[in-house]
Length: 136
Image (cartoon, rainbow, N blue to C red; front, side):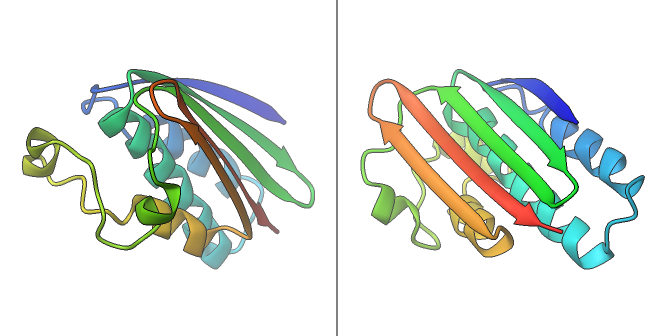
């Protein structure tokens, strides 16, 4: 099963809707609560990164018998230092985003902790491509 969601940067009122929808679908597959939680955290964090940092993005989800594969590509400022961005607490979020309760610098570390495999590629000034998977 393949699903695609368009994510609008800066639209915090719709933020989390794609990850919630995927979680509902996965519940129908009788996935263990532990795996469902891991997947939901990684989905939500990746979606919020697009909303908080990019102009727009696309989340492509593939649900297979062996697990879930997710690719999130955005058009945005990109990440200048991926190694630094992977550090807990590091964030480039604006003050406005932080005042809304986001941008604590836990997104990418949480995705890495909750996925079995994660790849992150970014071009400053162009955007970011995040791919992760969780095995069932």
